[in-house]
Length: 604
Image: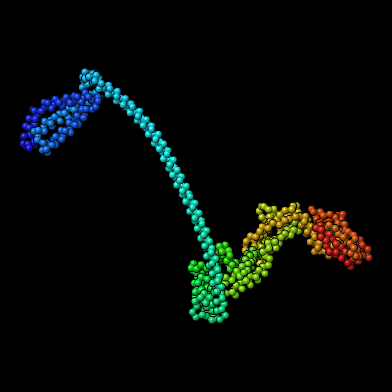
């Protein structure tokens, strides 16, 4: 094979090829470019020829370089392909530059343009292209509209399907949630029933257990002496009591703690243990020990005794909360009553007495059917609590009757107005009153003396009202010795009835002054001046002389409500009697319809 790259052989070979094929290759290439230019209205043939010829030239050149063909044979073809690519490429470049759609030659030579028209190349093609373009555009628009419509319908269908799917899923979730809730409620009810049954069984078991412990403790107490190796709760409680009585507080404390380890829900062992702890460690120490026991155990009695180790107001608040949370835990009511007792407070207010009575009444009510036995290991402790409860309830009497312990008003009329005296059921540190059912209260103030009960200035128990006061309601309230407000209490006030009642009270109280024989040295005269002064309570006065026939009546002037105690100037408050009259019998009929006893007055 000839080496195209060796020395000077290549130029001579190229010259030889040009001399042989150059003329016809150039001519054919020129003709191909011209034909492609003329046919340009149909298609860009110049570009096609350029592309094909360039590719062919590149392939031939590669084959020559790689020695796949003989250079002498392949050079003519390479020259032809190169010439065709050059000519066609030049024509295509000129077309693009001049933007000539009918070709460069048609633009330069009118005859070629006429030839194209005569051959129908340009017009038919252009018309066909325009028609095709128009139809294509319409088709594209119709297709686009159809596509948009289909897409819109598809979106609507998809949206509806999605909405239905979501609704179906939501409905399914709701159904499942309802089913789950129903199942949960059913399971909860069943669980509550099971827990209630377990609680009832546990309660009965605890009651039986405490009963057994109580019986064992009673037997051990009868035997006396400490048990060397205690194992049961009753044995530890027995030993604690024995050690405590003998003064061995350390072993008593250990035995009480051992008993607490059994978590027995009985009140008396823990109250005794708390007393021991307060003596040894103070209230703070007892509170700490029972706080630890309450955290470990479940027995309500331990938690209750722990509450009792707090101070005053905090203790009462916690005790109230315990009772609210455990309304049927009977021992709590006895212990709550002690918070209001005279032993605890020193002096009780009416509210304290009522609170004590309410708590003790509630505690004693559980005695029915042995309802208190389950809370006590030592039955003597229960008996002590019951005796103390009954004794205190008897002493408190009917303190729970609200009508028996309400303030009262005593109106006293004078010619200047009304003096209202307040009677309270207990000592007060302040008193206030109000006319009507609304408006501010007015303090009565204080007297110039101290109340021996409180050591404070004594509250004034009276106030004044004008004589023009009409029938109304008077509200009374006061502060007890602990500063707690009591009331208000509404008391009706009728001036007419109060005047009559006040006069009647005076007449009944001082009846010996109704009649006076020969008063002031006026022999032969009988005076009845007092009855004239308090005549507003009198409807009629019947009398008789030297006997009880009551066959005569005294003339009493009518009541003057504006000036009730003034005797009219024309009223005659006496009458004459003979010396033979030795006595006089009198009976008064009051305005309320009642009658006084027949009173006899003897002449001296």
